[in-house]
Length: 278
Image 1 (tube, one colour):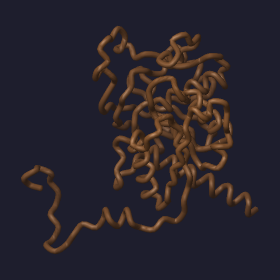
Image 2 (cartoon, one colour; image 1 turned 45 degrees about the vertical axis):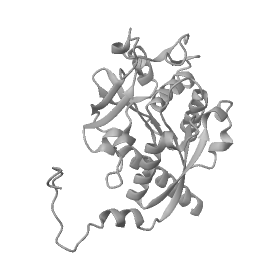
Image 3 (cartoon, helix red, strand yellow; image 1 turned 90 degrees about the horizontal axis):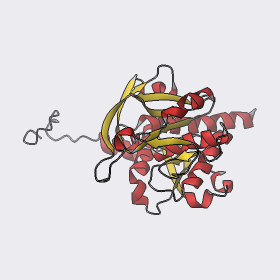
Image 4 (tube, helix red, strand yellow; image 1 turned 30 degrees about the horizontal axis):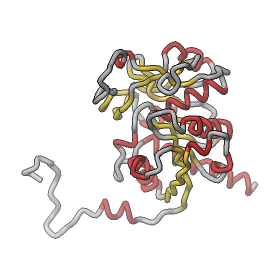
């Protein structure tokens, strides 16, 4: 460790650090089922999300069962696929294929009080869904996915305009997000800022922010003029991030949004159980 400059205290001779093994092998108290609504058929495409859900489960001693749901099958509102899950995650992605199904999954979660976590494109589609179905902006979409949309509530980052060579030009790497006091984001992170990794070219269109917030959405995390976190009060858990919190999650340091998502699922189950018993 000294040669590699990793630091850390050496353990007494003959002893091994068992924290890792103890954490990943301890018994779970219950299990939950989470729908991962995406369009890429390979688990490897979402491996960081699978692992972040595992890490949250380790934090709460819960087995998290992931149920893959192809977003293209939800475009016509096949809500039966979502009826048995405890929570819904809508991850990132590129291209228009499958996005209508993602929007339907988000609508279902919002209208039925199902805990929802949206990541990158999932965050953006949460804004699109709200614009369409709450603000009544017919045809609202991301300019990335529909160049003819009458309401581009998601639009290109200003610094991306005029770029022809797309290689390595996205907004990448770790950036600081300022968090509004008293929000769900503040509760999850326990701080008034967080550092998370990004990978995107589009953002919430500033021209629509006032209308969206007047209608009830809360943008609780910002980076300058950019909206980074969205949440919906009076919902068990409706939380979206423009960044990728799953990238920094570790077995011994679970991502706060994933832990909060799991806590909301467990709380909803306790509430349902108490209502059945009363």
